[in-house]
Image (cartoon, rainbow, N blue to C red; front, side):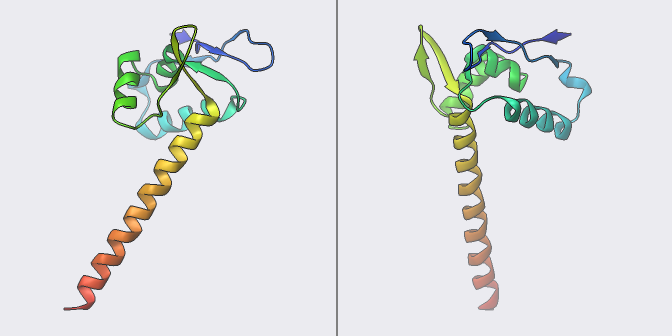
Length: 120
């Protein structure tokens, strides 16, 4: 089954189509992550992604997108014409910040464990 993302391209503000396989059961997790990174990376920085487009991108239901925002996994949206919307730039910045914080947390935990182990 083929589908397209519900997005607006920044150059002409018309709906753009990004085709992808939606049979996520056939892909393993690593392939799925690579696909999402590639699809998101190929979009212009100022591309607007509506909730349904973001759900298509991640292969999830729009309700899952709402829940990911509530959990802080995705940034809060803004509203455009009454619909939740994000830019690619905001999504990437949010993900990069979360990765940076997780790396710092891991480094801190490793330092504490190392310090604790050296005291014995």
